[in-house]
Length: 472
Image (cartoon, rainbow, N blue to C red; front, side, top):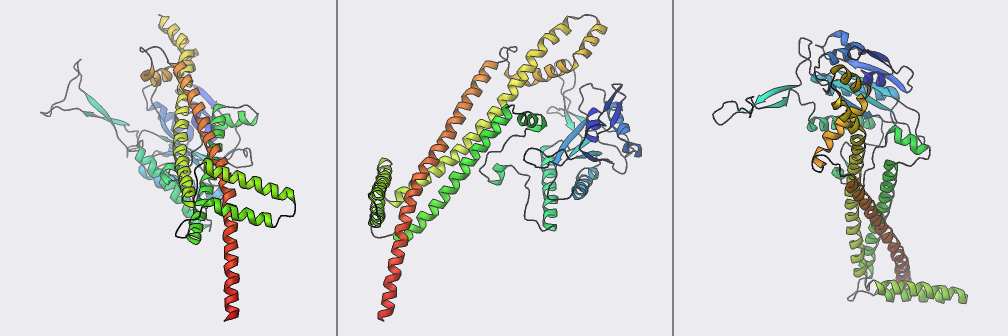
């Protein structure tokens, strides 16, 4: 109920909790609407009626009531076009399956950099609705049978069964189909408006894009960063953007240099491939012949010495040697990209574990105190006062269970040390990218010198051909 009130910017009363959730002063809510299948009770078009009915249908205190989706809208479309597109998407992909869809369109103030962030929040009850308008079951029992077709009993005499979902709404394949459908609808709208931009529901890796994705920061992190407060997610995204910039620069430089090498090798190829040192000697000799001052000649000599020293230090003699070095950089850049992405994912996981450890540490004394209280009423009052802390403790205990040492101790120090080591390794790999960029500067200088020699040969050949034409 509170989630629905927040998304719609309304005041709603929860019969289950006996509380009001008032978000009528929340800004940025453009519109909200409830879409119902034809067999749903018409009174469910009222938001408070709908979600009170959903809460009444559940008996478990910790039952999951709804699926929640966030959909980014497109700045290239008008707000009305975005709303119409989102409504049609929900009708085609959700309501047509018998789902109820409660959606709200938000357009908060522009974020840093003036980028608008219009989006849709969607909530759908998990329970399917029967044709008679009543809520159905989320799961059904599928009993385990032995080789004789008889039900299997557990150690206490109960039948063993598996809980099987009654719908496919929660399957990853279904979510993938929804994501693809949304991308196709947006791209069809782009084409209709004559726009070249397109969106893709697949990850960078599945698209074959060699780029590390940044992490979603959320409004809280963005607000802190805007105030100058550095956050872990903000630092991580700055690392990622810096690494991506270096990777893109390296790949573009390598691509251009490899293309140039192929062209040069084709034009300058001889029975014996020319040595780069000889080509550099011709280039700087020509520069010195046209130099008017001793200072200019000394500068040419220093540049020539630096280039020759680079070639000698790195055992580069021919254009083929240079091509091999660039190929090696290409492979290294790809390896570093993969390694940086793996470290970023692990750092994110460790951040989550450390956060859970904080919840566990803060909630453990409250949980222990609760267990010491013998009177039921006092236990319930104490639990109500500390509901948020206990909920976070239960969640942390459940997620941390596989990691607890001796079933009790959280290995926080190990995680912190691992994260520090990963961050150090991450920084070292980014320094490798910087070293490659620095090395490519030397190669670009050599590239310029050899390119000048090639153009000189072309001009000389043109003059010879012109003289032959005159003689003929």
